[in-house]
Amino acid sequence: MPRISTKGQSMPDSPIRKLAPFAVAAKAAGRRVLHLNIGQPDIETPDIAMAAVRGMDRTVIEYSPSDGFASYREGLAAYYGSVGVEVSPEQVIVTTGGSEALVFAFQACLEPGDEVIIPEPFYANYNGFATMAGVKVVPVASRIEDGFALPPVAEIAERVTDRTRAILMCNPGNPTGYVYTDAELEAIRALVLEHDLYLFADEVYREFCYGEKPPRSVLALEGLDDHVVLMDSVSKRYSMCGARVGALVTRNAAVHQACMRFAMARLSPPTLGQIAGEAALQTPRSYFEEVKAAYVGRRDALINGLRAIPGVTVPTPGGAFYAVARLPIDSSDAFCQWMLSDFHLGGDTVMLAPASGFYATPGAGSDEVRIAYVLEEAAIRRAVEVVAAALAAYPGRNA
Image (cartoon, rainbow, N blue to C red):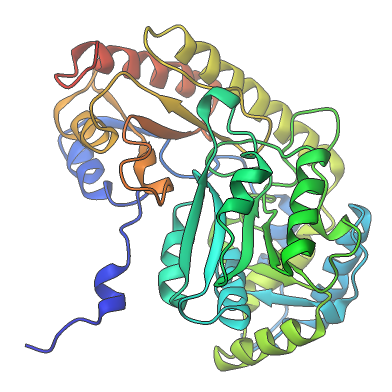
């Protein structure tokens, strides 16, 4: 039979979704599965976005321009201005989710075999996007004992080689929920300028920061106009994951032109998603304040509950809606599968994401899980009860 390509064989499974068949089987067996494995919030999408789709007067769902509808790009530029990032509509390309924005950036800025440095753990699909582009991920480890703060810049600098072309960071972070400080961002800025690198920035969780001030966008850092490519998305901000609309933002004209060629090749971003996304820009601030308050309650219920379990280590996330916890287990992959296939408490079980898939270093994260606190507080508390009971019964528990 015809062979599968090397790239096809090397594409990694998603740690977020690979256990889905076991969840389906658990449900078929009559169990309730509490889904803490995926960043799919149960928060309602803003009414204004839903109303725009329901009330549209189009008779044809046509292609949009390859860079997105002009009115939407104008709205996005105004939004970025409101968070301290001055860009023009011509510096924005609407994409099919934030994922496509990063794939465009990799393909436009990096040659096959080039290297991108990423603090790990990181969003698991970065591995897949790098494989698609033929790019080598060079990880630099952050530490759970430090709350997953940025690794010392000296450690990052040690990873720079003659094939290094970029640094990629997510702020606030997925999967850790860590929010980079101004000092950490300035350190990265200096490193990028010293080595003339690109800085790819995933800022899709900007609205969900639980400290005194929101995280600073890398586009607000001085002197990086030609270096920064920002990835954004409506998925989390407005709880519109299925809209599949994101954005690539850069002041680098050459990068913009190259990304536009990729955008033209895929024709256009989703029309219905853009209609919803443009309307969502009018969402009142009260929506975000209510959502943030809900996430803080969920986070605290999760973190306090986990810390009461013997042998569990978990930092307090400063943003997004994820936490990485270290458990007293032999293998997070085995434990997460076992919970779905072999364990329940009163008919309830929990689906978690093995953190091993959020690392590029072999063997790293083997006793860690990523937990998405995207369910209401009562469900979070129940999930913690189930995890505690599962850890007590798990045959691969470490002392």
